[in-house]
Image (cartoon, rainbow, N blue to C red; front, side, top):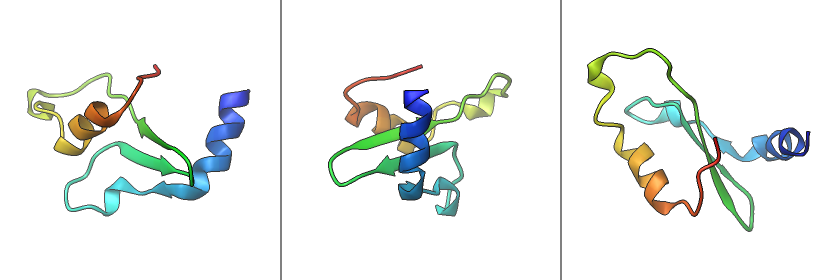
Length: 68
């Protein structure tokens, strides 16, 4: 429940990744003190999904933790 409240509260700061030139399921959520990345999951995909979008790879590289 705590995480739901946090994500709903931070939703105001969500930057829509779809407005970029290349579409992805990655959203960046920022507050004045921290940053979180929210990545949608794909359960069925074709081979052309790989390699992952560079924005996704950069988000993984810049993150301190991954929460699944």
